[in-house]
Image (tube, rainbow, N blue to C red; front, side, top):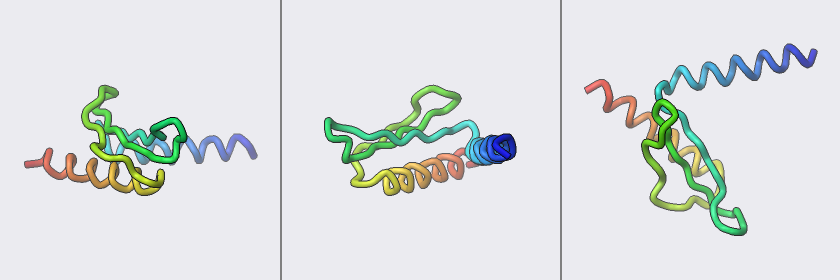
Length: 78
């Protein structure tokens, strides 16, 4: 049963990575309290772009980062 859960997790991670390849999104807490969050986008593992503002929740930071990746992918096709 544990093995099935691991495979599901790996499959979910793979699906996410292929949808945004070559970009990946990292969301990290910032500051001493860790109550604010920033995102960074990596392209082929190297830092490509970082958020210019701090977000009040991890969810908001992730949403903004994902929107930026979508913009990068859309603009790449031009």
